[in-house]
Image (cartoon, rainbow, N blue to C red; front, side):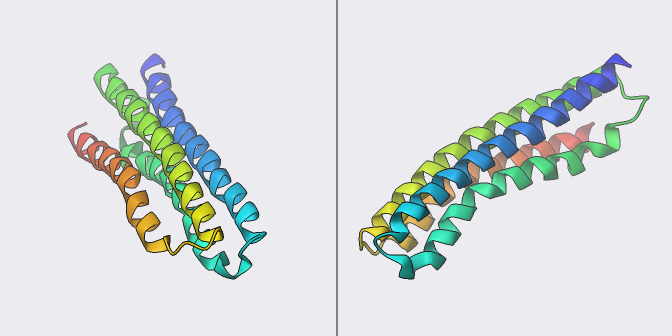
Length: 148
């Protein structure tokens, strides 16, 4: 029973850490939106897109579960369980940090748009960079899932 528990701890960390990062990241964007709307409420569509962007890391954590669920059986070996735990830690922490940093970046862009600067496209491009590392973590999880 210990190996399966180890694997489920990895899954819980993966989903939980990615979800926590996304929740905080979208809150950064939401807080910035509320402040920016006081100055420029006509750009709400831009604010909405930038606020929602850090939410994707939470989805990546959930996707990781789907990628690894085939090995979550009672007959899981310790090697497989440790691999799932490793994927969970890796994807979880990358998702957490990238969502937090992406949320901060998007919040700065929202504030700038609220102040009248035309930076939506540039902010969106810059916000892709932290996202890229979360996507790489999902890709690594996918590759490991094929090996276990």
